[in-house]
Image 1 (cartoon, helix red, strand yellow):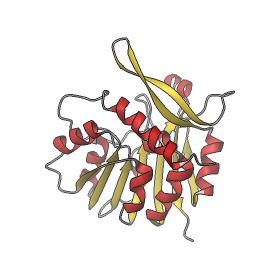
Image 2: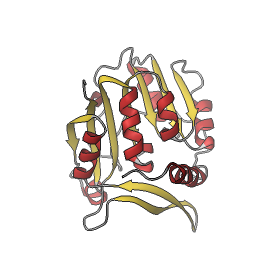
Image 3: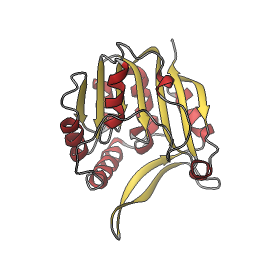
Length: 227
């Protein structure tokens, strides 16, 4: 069940305060699409399908480097959304010379209904993991064109722990950590929520290298149902 909207707003503000402090001071460069939690072999931009002329949105774009990397694949429009004003400013500054990109500040749950029709949406350890997916994913499905692709990467729930909303600490500096809110599910749980939100899952990748397997890394490709 979705949490109340006022709880969604509170969670977004809590996450923003943390991500504002986890920011790089220097200008970034476009980055190749990488879905692993820690660098390892895995899928790349092919999970989006054809990108030439596509309209793509990233939920929780952070510093924007991976969305910027998609410009090299010929996207017509790329929209990066993040709840952290520090990170949005960093992305807009780093990639101001790439005309296809734009950067929206806000909570993905609130912003999603205002997106244009989209060919693809992705969340690379981003807002789909840090927002209530019961509220966010149906809104994403409404903005995707029929058959449009949604790609999610996140850490799955550890065995024996409850599914759903969890408060977890993130290190923001030496001897300092702040709270974030994440939504932790098993792979089966994510597939269930995607199906309830109007998606058909086509591909699930579970890396087998020691580090990613330990952390429960998962990459899921789904498409919006045609009806």
